[in-house]
Amino acid sequence: MPQAALRFPREYIDSSQKNWRPNDASDGTCCSAARFEFGSHLSAGALMPPIIKPGEPMHTSAQAPRGPRFSDHVTDVGQFRVARWHAPSKSEFPPLLFFTGIGANAELLAPFLDRLANRDIVTFDMPGIGGSPNPHRPYRLSAMASAANQILSDLKFCEVDVMGVSWGGMFAQEFAYRYPRHVGKLILAATSAGMPIIPGNLSTLAKMASSLRYADPAAMLPYLQSLYGGSTRDLDTYALRMQAPSSKGYLYQLLAIAGWTSVRKLTQVPTRTLILMGSEDRLLPPSNGRILKFLLGNAQLEILEDAGHLFVLTHADAVVTMIDRFLTTGDSVSRSRSAADGMIQGDGPVAGLR
Image 1 (cartoon, one colour):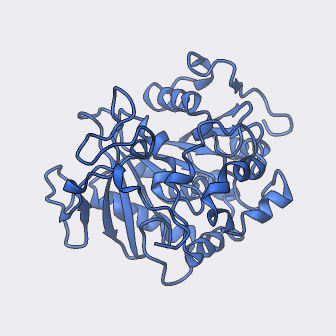
Image 2: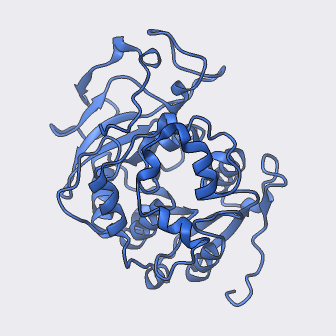
């Protein structure tokens, strides 16, 4: 683990369950010698007060979060640490394949994923990020899409809904383009179609070229506001879940999207799509979402007010409500206002585009 990374405090970990074991495939998934599973269910919820003594169940409210189970998968591209949230019971809905942002380990968005409780969820760390080993060579998004498809094959998932945030949103577009038969619905959050990109602030975009923001977790909160914009509520434990990426891992993620564009690809993606953008996003303003909506033939755009780049955490109630309605009913999410009232700007016509 890089020196700047935060380690889990010992009091948050049940040491009696800390063991690695081969997956016995009792859940019907593929078992191979290259796949191992971590015995304990560690969740980002376990990183929050109150302090949990060893041996006690890890939860922060009356209802404990599910928490992910981690495993290693070897693909043609390399080895990946995969996090899987199991549905509490047999689900009628397809699993959700989730792609995180640049430099982000799976734990960073775990509080958000914990709340999508009615389906299996799968995500994985990119090479050199979180628990995945460093990449051997630079890669493109097409190679990562192939790796994701192999992981889904290992897990015996034939069809999934797909969601990507920021860098992961570009990854999600590439996956939907290359494997349309495997994708039920698509959710793109705080992302763009690549080149040409419309940045909110050039100085903000320049800061993303460096991973130095991971060097001082104690100073992360004010840095987040200046970098990403919008509200910073519910981000007080963000740094606790952060694991600094390797320099090579972060650089290769940048190179993967250098010159990348989905402008022509999206015109061939028939998947029904929900696009979510933050009104105060300093990195990728809502105009990028309007371009995505124009390119996709079957998409709706929702813009969250007072929301920066990390709105899946700062506006989790509104986002979870919209996603759940979109994935489970197919109705227009803008009609779902119970938990999100006053936070969402309706889609509406986009002058010059639709």
